[in-house]
Length: 160
Image 1 (cartoon, helix red, strand yellow):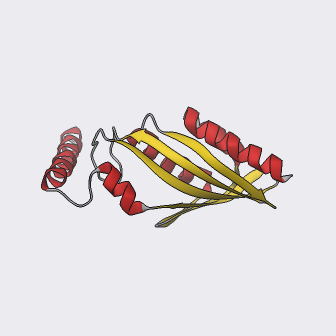
Image 2: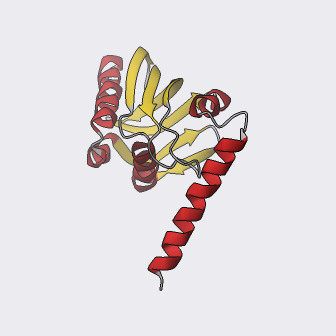
């Protein structure tokens, strides 16, 4: 694929995420796709869809705005702006209803017209500050604790 074709594929990827149509990711990713996040690797299309779905649940209005896209060989680097409102649980953090914006750098490696590998780099501390959970404030800790307690109570009641 040409560098322009690779850039088109990555632009299409962002369109699919912005539409929230995760079934189309099957067309984008290779079977052995790996997504390298700052703190973990996500392997395969299924796991990637689960993680993306978690973010969509936490930020139902999430959007990625491409600021820059640079391609060389079989790699495309994009600088995107993530925007969304935190309305659902994310990694044990209950909804804060805070609107946030975060700049993220992605590198997509493409082979045979599919994304085979993706690296994601962002400032996790800024992410936590945008959510309002860092530095830890007593009311945020209490809200998160109460949210988790309600979830646990609901699960226990449903097992009766």
